[in-house]
Length: 301
Length: 330
Image (cartoon, rainbow over all chains, first blue to last red; front, side):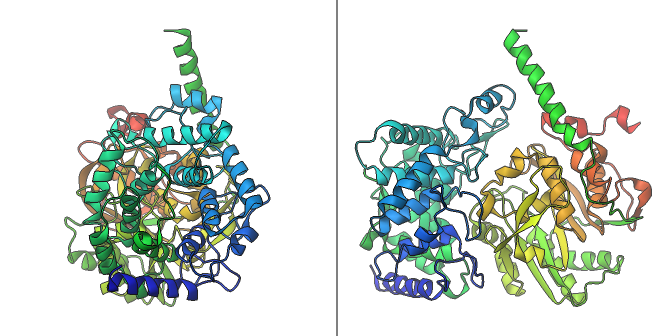
C-alpha cells in the first residue's frame, strides 16, 4: 500500500473503533444508538484482523430462526442475513450459529418462487421482464427476490461450501446465480433487480453491479459478466461516490484487475470527517486494503 | 380464444377488482379534511437563482407559522441518470430551505431515502444537490439509514398495520413534500403523496421498498400519508416527466411550481395541470374522503387558475384511463 492509502486505512480503522456502540455493533449514522446489521458486518470485516473484532455482537443478535434482523430491535428477518453469515465465517469458527444461518438461507426465498405467484408473473403481471423460475432471496419475508440480498446469500453459501456442493445447497446456489443472470440490465450490469420495465431497458448501478460480479466470480465467464466488468471499470474512473467506488474496487480486485489508481482515487474522494455513514467508512477501508490484507468477498473460481 | 387465455383474462379482471376492493370500505381513523384548502400555481420557466424570489412571493400568500419549528424538506430523489428529469431540482430545494429559514424556522433539514439507488451520496453528488446544501450549510439525512421507530398506521388500506419509520421524520414539526411532477408506471402519478414513499427506510424494507408494492401501492400511499402528515407542498412542475415514469419517461414542460397547504389539493391540482382526472387516481380519490380536498370548489386558488394542457400527459397503458378524454372533459 502507498503511504496515503496506508494512512487513510489506519484512520478509518481508528474511526470505526471509536464509533463502536457501547453495547457492541455499529449504527448506520453517527449519533444513532441503534445497531445496524450492515454497518456492523462491514465494520467487523474491516477490523477482522484486529484483536478487538469480536463476533459476540453478531452471535447475540442472531434470531432463534437463524436469521438476523436489519437493526437491533427489528422483529423480522433481514435480507442481509447472508452478509452476517459471511462476516461470521470471516471472524472464526462458529459452527452452531453458521449452521442455523445456513438452514435459514436455504429455506428463505423470494415470493415468486411459489407456484401461484409464478403463474401470475407469467400470465397477468408481465410488466417487468423476469423469469420467476429463477429466484433468489428477498429483502423482507413475503416479497420478491432482489439482487443485493441474493448476492450476499450466494457469497455466504459459496464461501461456506467451497466444494462438494450437494442437494439444497447446490440447488439454491445454481438458482440464485440464474436469477442474477436473468435480472441483469440488457447491455450490462445490474440495478436493484429490474432490468427491463415496460420494454424499456433500465440503467445499471455501480455498487449493485460490483456486488453481483463478486457473487458470480466463480461462474464461467459469459456474455454478461465480461461487459459488466468492463462497465464497472469504466464507471469507476469517474464515480463521484466513495461507496460505489469502494465496491467497484472490491469487484475488480476479485477478478484480478489492477486497482491501484482507483484506490488512489478513492483516497482523494474520501472526506473522513464529513462521512457520517459508517457502512461507507467500512467499505472504503475494505477496498483500500483488499490488495494487501485480502478480499473478504472473494469466492474460489 | 384459448381456454388458458380466457382463464388468464378472468383472473386479471378478478385481480383488478380485488385491488379496488380496499377502497370500497373506509379504513381511516377520522375525517381530518380542512374546510378549505389553498393552492398557488406560480409561473417558473427555468431552474435558476430567480426561483428563490418566486418561491418567497408564493409562500407569503400562505402566512405560514413555522417560527421556532424544525422543518423537514422531503424532495424526490430516485436515482441519477444523466439527462433524465427524474429528481426534484436542487435549486428548488435550496430555495425552499432559504425561504423557511427566512420564515424563522428553528432548523431546516433536507431528508430523503431513494427507492431505487442504494448509494444516496451518489445521487446527491451527481445531481449537484450535495454541493448546494454544503454551500448553504443545510444538513441532509439519509432516511434509508436513519434510526427507525415502529409506528402504528392511522389508516388500514394496506393491512400493514405498522411501519418502521425514521426518527428524523417523526420528530419534525413541519414536513414539506417537494415532489417532481411525474407520471408513474405503478401508481399513475407521483406527486406530493407518492413522494412520501421516500420516508420508508431502505434499511428495513430494502431497495426498492417492495413490501409496499405487495400490499398495494395505492393503499400504502394512503396509509403512509394518513400517518406522516404533509404540512406543505412545493411541487416542481417546471420540467416534468410523462410516460414510463418515474425513471424512463420523457421530459414534459409545465413551467410552474405548485404550492399548497393540503397535499390532496396539491396533487389534485397537479393532476389537472397534467391533463389527468384526479378522481381516477385511487390514492387521491381516497384521501379526498378524509385527509384533504380534491374538489375545486373547496380549493382556493391564490395565484393562477388551473389550465389543462393542450394534450394530457402520456401514461403507460394501464393508466390511460386517467387522461382527460373529450367525453370526460365535456
